[in-house]
Length: 253
Image 1: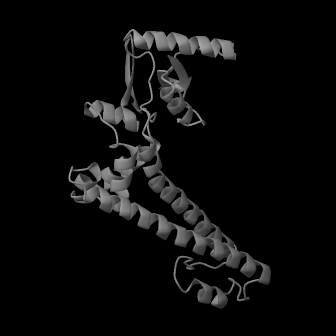
Image 2: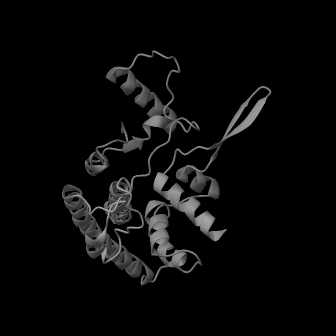
Image 3: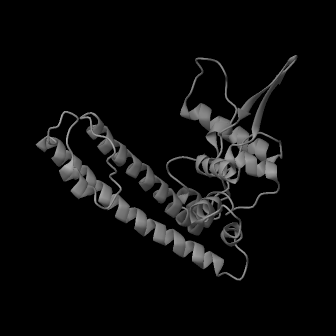
């Protein structure tokens, strides 16, 4: 029986150990109790002893010792790459659009929309705030930004098509999948359904408290003696799932 921290190695080591007949546990390193002293000793040996103590206490059934990670299957892990890549591409698209608008705004140009199909023709007609044509080097820089932006738009379209194929295949299953049930609700489209399904509802939850804790929406009270206050949500769960749930809540309102 072994224990390891969840980190950049992913879950392939855990799967190798399981194939060799070794019982493997993956723990959230932030959930292990440590000394609160400002200058605490930290070595590999001390960390290893802390992991072993956490594993022994977990096997004894002690509550709130640590948080073991529910390891997804290779299929589940690969399937949620689609929504994550789509979000990363969308954020990169926003950065390029803001970059182009910022360059033009410094020259007194506003109202240019890089996402329009006639963005190249519009660029040739732009003038600075003092009536001059756009400088040559700036125009070339913006043109290269548009090249990267157009590549991103093509990649976003391709990844969105992959997402739609996943949702269609899930909707055609005989057993009702979470994606199929989510798409039947008002206000939930392919984007929300794919994130909720691939980031949260791919696993089993016993109650709504576990859902809130996994999404980082669980409350964090601070009670000691006469002090009793609420610190807000923990934000210690899946950030992609939490963001989508908040956006969906605002949309339903």
